[in-house]
Length: 189
Image 1 (cartoon, rainbow, N blue to C red):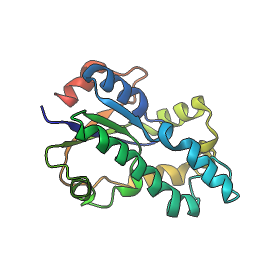
Image 2: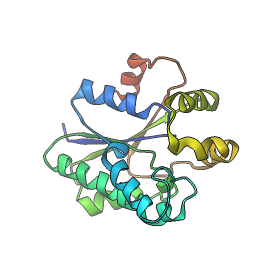
Image 3: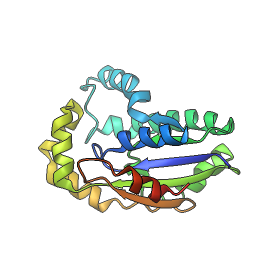
Image 4: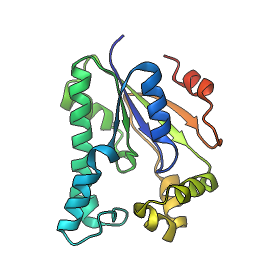
């Protein structure tokens, strides 16, 4: 089987990490979480410019400079694993890249992914459940989202993933427990 790269996309607190780890465990994929890879250097970069290490949403410096660096780092690490024949799950929102329909094609070209199968798994969630989960995780980086909840929700609704060149699947994660049977049926490896 050719290596697969799963783009695990969806809103913050939608359950991407939990789902990604379960998939990685079951199928022995390399699990790469953008937050785990990047949060320390992102916090340092933000602080070096006088911002809170958690101030991302609505932060011009983060959006214009740091975010692309985070995604490039994530994708470079993924590519190293894929070139070794190891399938990868990328756990990151990717929201800022949704409008670029050529995004997957550009990655295939940049990394020479001729024998790599890209798969987009979009995790969806009811917004009331999302807010509850976000409250329960108590992260400082969610403060802007709570203060601007309606704007945040609208921004998620408006951003449709327009990527071409990858198979696309969707998994609703609004239940209190992940329905693993349904998840693996959606993936159908």
